[in-house]
Image (cartoon, rainbow, N blue to C red; front, top):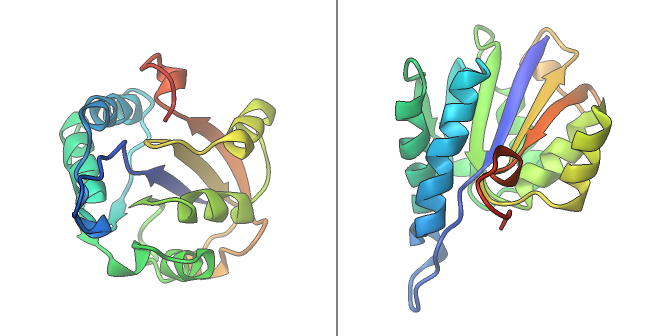
Length: 175
């Protein structure tokens, strides 16, 4: 089994005249990202490797989550995650090194949502419904893949183990 965690970046701002790639986190995003990190630590959801989109808002999200973990896992900035169609994201997952049992991608929508839906053949009922209704900023999908090698990750090979958002953690409404 392999575990994939798809984390959408926390809430961001879009100041006038700023390029999409340079958008910073909003105050709300700076509050919810550490809460998601604390959840990961409390639930022992610790990645072996984290791939982060190089966009400012994803980098800032990761930088606020990492200190909340008991130990900082290795991470890399992966340019292919930024504005990636779902098939490219799947390729990134399939190219993951064999010694990585749990992979986290810190990315964007619609990519996170589409990849989670593509991979999840089944899952915990309320989690599937919540994810289908909305994949908000700082939303986290945890997908257990019935594969022993990342290369075998394919549509409908996974089970959505949980879907967690800031609202489910009591951090106010999802955005």
